[in-house]
Image 1: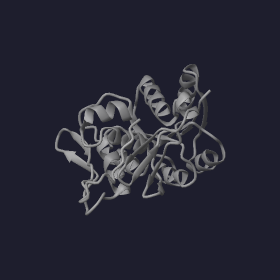
Image 2 (image 1 turned 60 degrees about the vertical axis):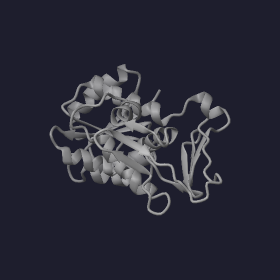
Image 3 (image 1 turned 180 degrees about the vertical axis):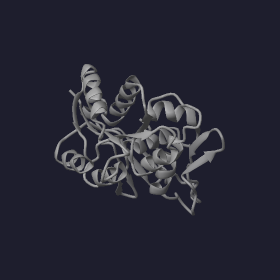
Image 4 (image 1 turned 90 degrees about the vertical axis):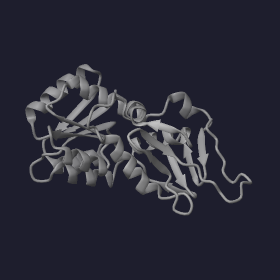
Length: 244
């Protein structure tokens, strides 16, 4: 049974979420204080954390920052409806997704399941020989969900890993924003939703350029993104691609 940890000062909402998520097959624990949330989120093992932005004392952003310094548990942030800045800040700080209050519990369950599918590799894939993607100086291990740039391990969130995996598997080809939202975030694209763009921006900063300042992830205006293939002066094949 997957364990969900809710950090929200709204006790009534915590009770409702506990009741609803339990009927959906999740084990749920809640706290109503940010500091307690940090302490328990670090010492206990959870599959996913639901975190409210507006907490008394220490806000949800600080809770997220401290949690991400210690654990890699995926986080869905709850924001006030219309607070676009909160959503963008949360995503930039490493939240996997957000949901504006008030929300439909079925939508929350859909978001939870989409994230859990993404962060837990398929059992048969994990037990088989690791599958890797190698392009230029990047190596991605699909079994261990690790990424290395020039041999150095990179710290990516679960969303960033899945986003990079999709782009690398289609390197040199356009991937539409709609496709990325559907396959990486696990939902249909909605008007004015900039979530995937924020994740791409964060990923760009972490990856840096390929060679001679060449941007790895190119924006195809109003359509989507493309992972660029480096063109070395020596076309003798220093670029190895293994997409199996």
